[in-house]
Structure formats: structure tokens, C-alpha cells
Image 1: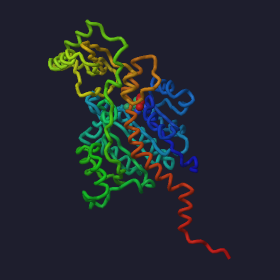
Image 2: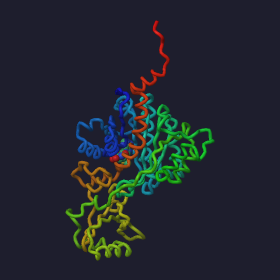
Image 3: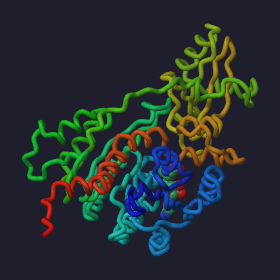
Image 4: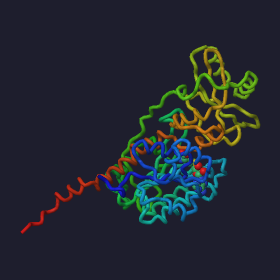
Length: 411
Ligand SMILES: C[S@@+](CC[C@H](N)C(=O)[O-])C[C@H]1O[C@@H](n2cnc3c(N)ncnc32)[C@H](O)[C@@H]1O
């Protein structure tokens, strides 16, 4: 039996509505501390997990280090941080880590530093792919240097939610491992500059080529953390998603009236309108599509997707961030806004208890992680690393070690 100090525990920073928790609890991780600054998200977390389960949720600024440190019990094995992406995107004017929002990463790093001997053995950071290119790659390199200075060996990958659910949502991940985890299943890159393309690290990185686009591989080749790079030979995800129709309520709901429908029909590009008319005139079974309203060349447009995916869910700041559902069903075209329940399903959390307020629900899910993505990372990377470490510390391992020791003779 493993002692409490060896438990599969984690802290969820920038916890929001707790979808990292949702993914990790499925394999037995226990959340011992969660932190976010947003009371509405905490209310959603509590509504879903219950008041008792959310006792560990600390509503407060990550920069309030004293308070954060005092509330983290013992030494959690893992800390996750899906820090704000606002400054990594064009909408945030790409202030990057200098921005007030995305700069909260430094608040998290400060907590890691001050945890000292209680520092988690493993960290998982999440952000948009713009993190890789922000300030010409300098922000990504800074994050790596800072983590390496805290003793973490590093790995990185980009995973798109569309390999698991019908939602386009690529996200960049950084994983860090403390020195005492280095060993199987981690494969390290040789730090002496003679690592060749045939080395086990390169082979593992190249095998998982979907999750390491060339731009990321180039960054990983050019940045040399003071610790080093370490990876798990996890291969590519198997890409098994089901159809958008299964995530959208095809009937029911308040569909727009004829006037609102035709207003949105008029907003479409001609080629999109023609495709919808063809589907309508086929009079076939229901087909669900999604679209976003955007201003293009000074004109409001409804851009429809025909690739079987929903666009990346976002927080509903203004009409352009809300997603439109279009159902073409036996000669009829129906339209409406996407609902919080559909958002929840597209984030892989279809049973999540929703708040009464629709906008609050859309906000929570628009900012959240996609559960099956985190589950995949957990199954392929986090849990194998934890289990290898725990196995080394089990009584059986002690017995194995003892068996190899020469017996002291009893006189
Ligand atoms: C990308 S969201 C993370 C969502 C989360 N992973 C989920 O599944 O719901 C970033 C979160 O960081 C929180 N945040 C922003 N600045 C913060 C700060 N200074 N301290 C603590 N939390 C902060 C926001 O309220 C937001 O919920």
C-alpha cells in the first residue's frame, strides 16, 4: 500500500468550471486544491461537484501566494495550469506573457517556486497554439526556461479536440517532470548536442507527429532547457469521434422565427447558401451544421462550416462569439443559438450540471478544456509516469531491492 505521501493527488490552477478535474478524476486522481478568481465559475463547479467536493476550491488571485501556499495540503504529485489565453490571441493584441491576463502564468510559477520541497513532481500547462508563436517564440522559450529553473524536464505537444469530439479546438500543452521521475517510461534527449535523429527521444517525438507539428518540433530542437527534454512514447491519438448530429438537439428548443431565419440566410455567402439549399432540396434526414457571425469587409456574415465540425467554442463576448446551429431536416431549415448543453457535450462533459443562466453556462464551457483531450494525455502520459514512480516506491519494490542485497550473516 502506498502511503498518503505517495497518493495520486493534483492541484488545478485556473480551474474555471473544473473540466481538468472532470478528466483526471476518471482515472483516480484526487483534486486537493483548485484555484480561480471567478466566482461564477466557482458556483458552476460547486453546482456540479457539490458543496463538499468543492471545499478545496480557493476563490482567489493566483498572485496571492501566501494564501495559496497555506491552502495547498502536503506535496501534490501534479499541478495543472490552463492559464488565460486572452493575450495570446489576436483579439488580445498579442501582449503575450506581458499581458495582464496571460501573465498570470508567472503567478503560478511563483507558487511553484515557493512550494520548495512541496513542489509537485509533475506539471501540465495548457494554452492556445498562439503561445508557441507569441513574441516570435520568446514567450514559449521563457516558460520553458522558467520551468527548467524550477527543476522540470520538459515535453510539449499540440492536441486538437476534433480527434475526439466534433469541435475544432487545437491546444498547446507543456508537461514538466522533476528529476526524480526521469527513468521509465520517460525517454530523455541527450543534452551533449550529439543526439541523432535515430535516438530514442527523436524516434518517439517523430512517431507522435500529429501532436508535434513541424513548428513545435523546430522550437523543441532549438530551445535547450537547463534540465533537458523528456518524453513518453505515446504515439498519435486514434481519432475516433462521432458525428456532430449526436451532439446537437435536432428537435425541440426555440428555433428562430421565419423573419430571423431569413435574416441569417441573407447573411450567408452565396456558396454557403447554395449548399444549404441543395441539402434542403434533397429532403433527406436531419443534418446539423454550425456557423459564426463575423464582420467581413464591413458586412455582417454568417459563416457556415460544412466539415462536420463545430467551430472552437468561445466565451460569448458579443454576438460574433456565439455559435449558430443550423439543422436541415427533410426539406426544412431551422436555426438557433447553440445551447449550454451542446457546449457541454462538445467539451466532453455532457452530464455536467448546468447553471440556470445561459450566458454563464456558455462562458464557463467556452473557456474550458475538452475533457477527452485531457483524458488522453492522462492515459498516455500522466498516469503511466505516476504509476512507474509509485511502483518504485511500493513494498514489492522494497522487497525486490532487499532480495538483491547480500544477506548479513547471523552469528
Ligand atoms: C482558460 S480558463 C481555464 C478554464 C478551466 N481549465 C476549465 O476547464 O474551466 C482561465 C481561467 O483563469 C482564471 N484566472 C484569470 N486570472 C486569474 C488569476 N490572476 N488568478 C486566478 N485565476 C485566474 C479565469 O477566471 C479563468 O477561469
